[in-house]
Length: 495
Image 1 (cartoon, helix red, strand yellow):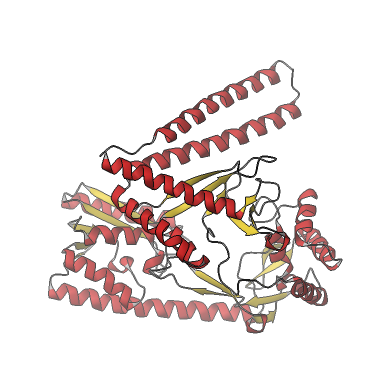
Image 2 (cartoon, rainbow, N blue to C red):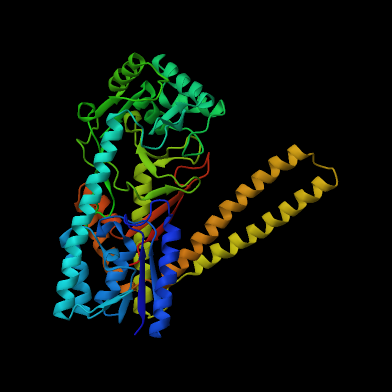
């Protein structure tokens, strides 16, 4: 039987070492150990995005499934603590999986066989100490963090308009004047009654680029307008993070009311006066339109449909102006469509997938990927044409037909088209692989359940039901086309 190797960076590692450096060091050490044992067949699991909770570590969950199935004779890891230092219940889940499957845990200096009473007691003791050590580390970190905040230090990512610096020995901020005048412009315009979407367009036209996206949009402007850091304050506990769980493997974030914030005077200078910031908050409150669905999910496709142009999630908007529509939050990016049309098309396409799947199972035939192969062929032909176009542009530059500015403009357009086609090509390959690898009977049964139960549920239930089978949906629609002229590219989950 094969072996596995599990690699993960922990808080015990040196903070100046990157995750890649730690994993490379441990991989080398464990590979040498495996060579000494004469082990050659090893499957590696690298936890790049690591977290304390078991359910925030996808590679660990994948490994545990294989361990429970009895796939491996043993699992190599740098230390038994790497398998988990979360709650005692989660550590119990991990150790029980190894014990019941009789899978060895192989670490440098010690191999643990949990079917052996002494090894089982030793691992439980080490798990208990590891949990205690983790709690102490977190307490020290939290205490140091709060001391820094109370002294006016700034420990988060710098907001737009500032650069990081140190004041004495404390981390702080200094004003970046190249960006700060755009911050002042945004606040000034909002106080004049201009909306966030218009301000976003103005900032983009003025050449401003936000820190963590290519363009300003309504949501990034709103974030700027509600950030008290611009007044020289340090605000902490603005959001509360809830740990991932088995039913929800994502961190759940809840925005706290302002009275629950920890607010102190920072060491950094203000860009906006406290009075102006408070006035902006009053305007924001006055413009707030409460939800008509009393906190319930209004969009049954929430979190599933993404824009085929920019990759952002599509949103259900515009219900106060008539029929709701599915819109990309990036203005002018992709044409919108009526929400009801998109929902109906999604259900229709799922029915079509289900019917084709049932025929494939009855005929014991391989999955019908002819449409995907045709799409792959078309994309390949388009890429060939783009490459020819790019070569021609170089020729036109060399013979003097195009000046350098014209060449750059046309080359940028061609390269953007090529990148979009390459992304589509990669997507087609993934969908072909997924179609060939899926367990058809499991997928068919789940599709039958989803389509049967969907009409009987409320919007939130419909959303959860769709997410049980659909990984994501890519929406595409050209501008100035008929209402139903849009396409949905459905990616099912691997069940």
